Length: 207
Image (cartoon, rainbow, N blue to C red):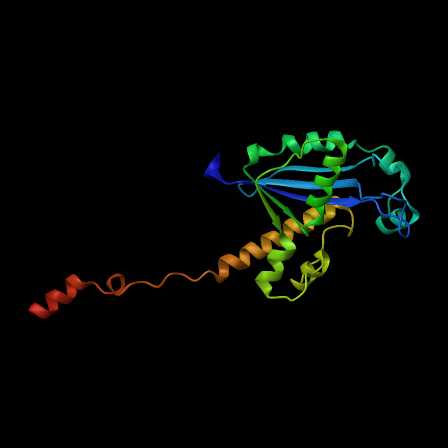
């Protein structure tokens, strides 16, 4: 692998939502996925799909309105099993950095896999970029995805709460933060020996 760099996988999921407190036993299910994989600073994969909810198959009015999504969208989406297979194919032997904004994406994916008795498809280093952003800028509270990119004086990609657009915005912020980190890294000061040619100095002293 060129430079032995880990693959970067930027993922965003959208989840189903209850109406009010929801039915007994309700849990969020993945209903949309957007992802971008990057290797050696080159985008290698971009993927977007709706996902069929497996247990609570009818979307609530609140969910449809908040995500601008229709029942027909998810009915025609991929199954959770197909999504898990897709993610496993991108896993790169676990030599990954899986980057999300917040920790809910991986929590819900793990929960959905456990309930469906499917293997969790990803491994490697998991990065919650919202926490990285918080630590880097010393914020007391976690910042929303699009607020974060606007604080950089930029615009988010596409529409907020569309999975692929949010994954692309996460990738965009990751690049900005990494650029700032490189800028702030202090260059090690040169030693006196590197700044002074002692050979010439000795010659002058002999004269």
